Length: 147
Image 1 (cartoon, rainbow, N blue to C red):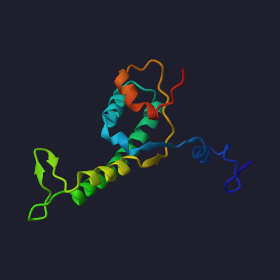
Image 2: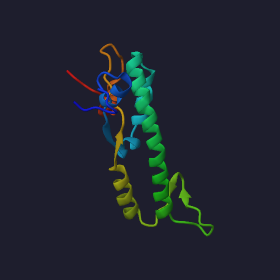
Image 3: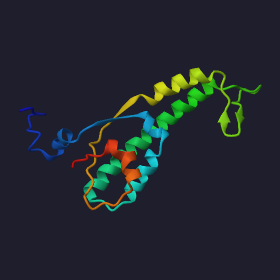
């Protein structure tokens, strides 16, 4: 049996947490759809205390990584954007004008394909929860679904 500091991790409740929690990997592409909105919808549902805790923990991690993703995306835009004489990005409507759209799209695709490991286990929803099929589809990667 594996021990830490001479203690059995299955008998020590604090150490036990390190062995029970799982991890999951999600690609950055979750930030390009309504995933974050669906998570918000899920948080508004009536959940057990345990499920709500696990979900909130995961949401905090995802929001933190979303910030890093968005900073990286903005850096890509700055790198590939056409600039005016003051060095500012040229924007027409709500679109940043790009020097080389193909190079930007390749770099962006690479960023979207990055897998991030989340130190959370998948969430099991109670049977009685009422959520839309669309929300369920958007968040299925974080759910422990059994039939």
